[in-house]
Image (cartoon, rainbow, N blue to C red; front, side, top):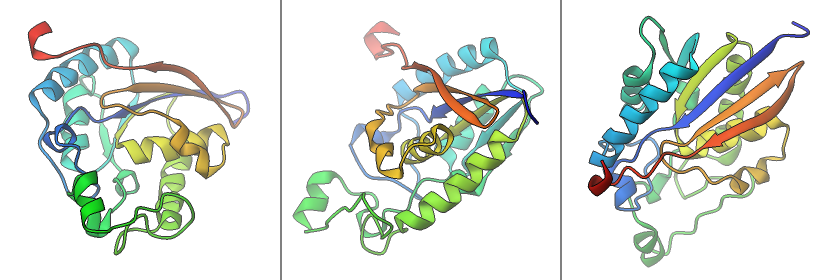
Length: 202
């Protein structure tokens, strides 16, 4: 509808144990770390103040558990399979050093698989864009909880950028980015990284 303004808060899930170990996890899962739990509490307070009509989430536990924990009371959580992280194939669960030691080449450009036996870039982009279109037609204020790779692809979809520009965005755990969509045009309004929530400052 012309003149309708929608705001979408996109959140990468909080820190996991695999993130602490610098492991590539896509369609597999990992528990939230102690710092990640503190990030979840901070996200819940921030989302409560921001407000939301609906919360969308990846089906993977690290995102879905977060979405359920931060959704304002009475606000539904809608699970979209298209928001799941990319499958890293034979690189799944490995650190970068382990990937290099095994001679695995990661290919982030183009439409082929990022890693052997993994999901292709084309398939990944197609499904994330389907989610982006659905969310953009949703309520006036939405929250999306998903993964680093998905956040990047959502941003280029909404902002009308080339796919290869998705890697220009730094997406730390628990970052919040607000996109305003007005008359089909997306604008990145704000980027809010989490505060220092290390244990000695908690």
